[in-house]
Length: 132
Image (cartoon, rainbow, N blue to C red; front, side, top):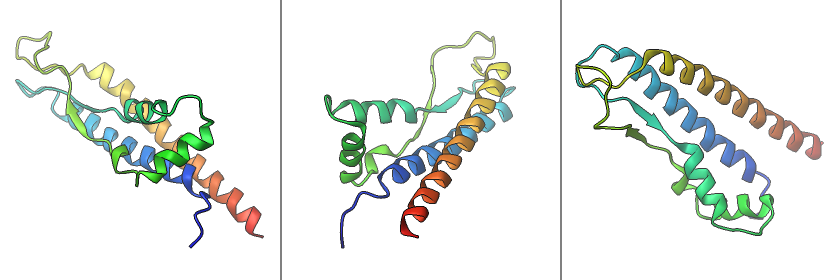
């Protein structure tokens, strides 16, 4: 099989879309637990993971950086849910969920997810046009 790298960007976009979906679930869970005493908000940081991975290979083109990320089988780009600011709370019940912030984050992650899906569709359309 030839390793053409034709799907390198699509693979990274797919990991980003998966992380956005996971983040939307975490934010929805935060909103649902906004009145639960002692609940600590959760979040996902895919952008930080991707920035770290792309920054590891300085002075290379973006195409080369994405290819290097894909060579590692992309397992290191799996985003995970983490608990945010475990000891911080401005409320008496020790819950650190700010509903207004969560709704803003939810809108933001939905826009990102839709953008990632749109970008993947465009990449597939480019590949399809080359094959024709």
